[in-house]
Image (cartoon, rainbow, N blue to C red):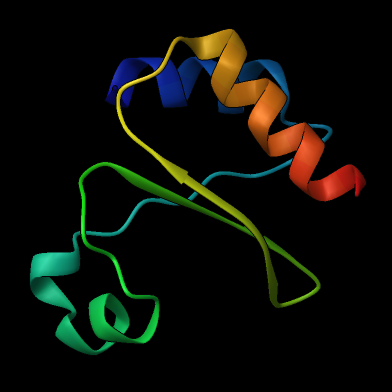
Length: 72
């Protein structure tokens, strides 16, 4: 999934940014956002969670999920 996420971020760099976090190194963040499965994607806009989804998904679905979250 790392490659898919990196490709999506590169292709859509004018639309959204992607950051990754190792939640094993940040238990507080893990608990705060109630991450229970891996991978988990949390979409933020203006500092607020506007979407979340998880699992191994194709790149286009990843991009669509992010765009839907930030455009709603």
